[in-house]
Image 1 (cartoon, one colour):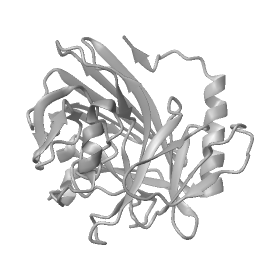
Image 2: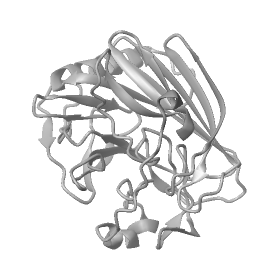
Image 3: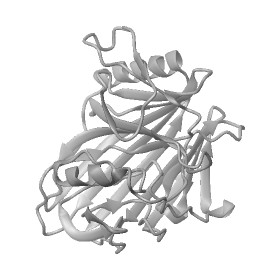
Length: 309
């Protein structure tokens, strides 16, 4: 993903950690038009996707407001699917990279291919052929799908990837997903104690640079501003994350980043899917919303597996 969405946490990319802070500011801002965007607004939340960037999620705000809490400075900064495979000889700039299909497009700014797109009331569906982030080619062996629904104060996003390539990759840590928010949201909140879902005290921190690791014992994380207002993300299958803050020039390139993590391999005929829930509010409101979702999920029959080999 973008130079500052690089996630040097997998074994195959340990050598990149030393290069991370040396990377030039080679971000290429997107040149999107207003009519490239499609919005859902249910009177509580307003959500927007960019059809020219794989229908990736790049806008999340309160309804009828202009403050977008997400950062979508380049094609790597969307809330989107991105997966890592083995080193393949590709280069991101001058840096060796890995097999890396990205829903929004590649680092030079070329978009992915939107194969299907439809929206109805408060729902949205997209099917995408992604691009290799570093090498730039369309990866026809990978299909990414996205379902979005707005319901009350929650945006429910379901991501699914189908890998039909011939190569069996090694397991890698995967971002599910990478989330970039406005740099004004500086304080990261999560619960990392031993009594999850019992309203024990949360942990607050202001991440530094580069990546830092954290535990998500309640499977959610939030970034908030000085007024304790912000955006929260709940990924039921994730119990750890990586994060950082990038100051950049102090303009639109600055951001706060967090990515819930899991580990799996891209292998022939592999299908992997997961749920992401986003909400806005004060920190205690965010936690209350996710507690309610957690409790409701426990009561639901699991008719759709999160991943299938």
